[in-house]
Length: 457
Ligand SMILES: *Cc1c(COP(=O)(O)O)cnc(C)c1O
Image (cartoon, rainbow, N blue to C red):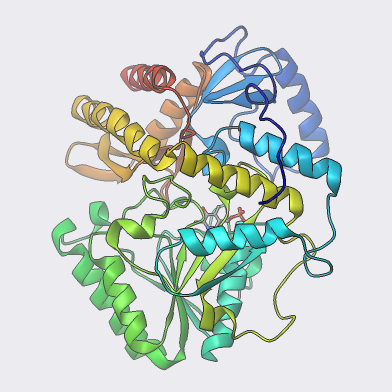
């Protein structure tokens, strides 16, 4: 950008928020409890909440609630605030932008920041080929658009997705999502031409992790050829590490096998990097861990420090195949969100947040493995970078999912001032997504809280 930017403020949204866990009331406290009553009267229960502490300020690794409690954030608003809440570069750019103009609609009269974000996406996503990007407002919208583009380019109807996959809550993306409760239950009929294949989930593969990639790939390819016909498949959509489904890292070789198959059959490979993208896994994008180059990449969550923005990036010939006016949306690439993305991307690159994510893995993994050694209910520790999880089971040698213990550990963490999230098809995975800017002392304090929550089981 050519324009001069104002000085970044001294800390997130003013004086830096002290980076210590500190509880001054029960969780939730009295003011949060009052607000929760108002929420219950005004908001339907379908929009649920993990932990009803109402937030006043946030920054670094801390969430400060309306009762004055400082909680450690191991969730980042579901992998969104990777650069931290109110990250200085994001605040500076958005503040400047909000005073200049807030919206023109990028499809009506454009502005530079939209182009700059697309250039950054084209530069940062895997592959050296010529690329184009388009911007929308949510992850689901990005996945919907990626499927529209793949169908338009190939002239084919079918879309292949995977067990345990999560791609959003709109009609098409809910259909692509694997799990019935809570995402699909009573919301049918679903979109047509979506087909689900087995996921190479090493921990639960019937014949064991070593044969997982090969067998999952063979089953997928056979199902495509026998049931669908490869020439009817527009796209294969996959998360390079599954998020909501349980932080499932596919068995090594599965993703490259899918990529080769797609290339051989003119199928568009869509990597849904919405949760894994923007340094979260220790690389800018998780596809890089296995060296795959997707045809299209969907991004959202970590892209803009919390402002609503999402993107589809892909091969120029695929992206350019859609007719003029076929893509867009009123708010897509909103100028505040674009400035936020430029601030977030600048932060990721200048502060080496990929390196920070790898550092977080180095700090957390040994601690989580030690936890697994002490507690038989921890069946597996997995993930990459600052996207780590433990899967809870009945006990040693019994992989029956243990959602009860999972909920109990999460509840104890919350009560002690550590925000953790759960996930997994069987609700038995504790996932850890700290902001990449969290300091080591907070990270270690959070891990101590987690240890005590397990000990209390
Ligand atoms: C969160 C998520 C989505 C949906 O994004 P929204 O912004 O909630 O619509 C899609 N895919 C993946 C992998 C996600 O984690």
